Image (tube, rainbow, N blue to C red; front, side, top):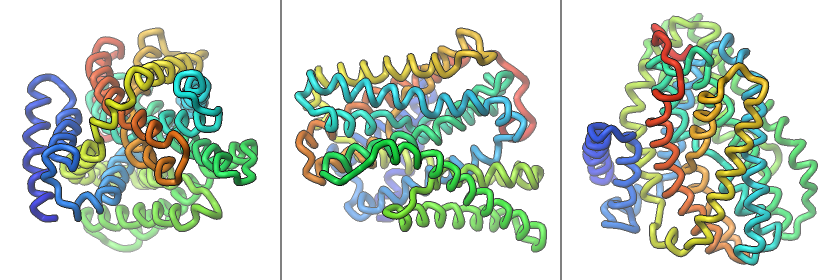
Length: 401
């Protein structure tokens, strides 16, 4: 495993540098690297590391969400509150339903099979979106209208909604007596539980840091350990109670910033340094999950489904930003920023096949295709459109404003 980590680190740094020099997002280089050296390419990543891939990816995602939370102020969150709620629900639901309907004539699916596929594809990728929004915030791009904060807040909830509805459709397919209305009603409960656990954890951490002198490096390790335990709690409670743990992780950072802003800014800088390594692991290992041959199997129908889904999502984003102070250019940027898919599709795309869902191999193929198409498309779109569509403000002295 150590050799595999060395290969990923060295080549990941190289690819990141090359893509940045080509004025492309570095994460694209790391995704491509993962595909090339993964088990479906040159197979340079050993089996032990691939077996632990999900855990490494989760830890990396926790790190970037903590860093995001440590930079979201109460003032900016209050300004985007209602728009963030709409943006976290409307686009994903519209995309999932559009795909569930178009999959019936295109793939010969039932509506339930289409729903399974639709809400696998409906989840955006915090792994792609969050670091790019943090970069924009650090440069002061779009911060005048709090656009990075808006997208950060909405993207973390979007996944909760998509995965909950996906689970409901999966339950209906298996013959379980699933009331989709009740499942939908549990979404806000899951979100509130995640936020509540995050607030509680954040307050406890604040009290501990006030009472005991702990070096910042050790504070980072304590916070990271508690955040990982939060996700473990979500897994342990999954069959009884849904908890939006990743939202709770971000909330920990928010509470620390609210209560101990000076400490929070220092910790954010520490997490930024850890992210240099975590980013490589995350995107190379996500790329290593992708089998290009499976994506090819999705064919033209797969591309049509993706196009229909992204169109519905884009309309949903436009609707969600009606009534805000955003101008047309800024609203169009939000549309583009909400395209990338990667982590959720890599994590759950194969579940229907493993559970014997008819058409599961097609569902997996379209999920893989969505990563190959939308992750580069969205990342490039954000990279190219941000300076053209968003206003430039003075970069904040510390953290995200």
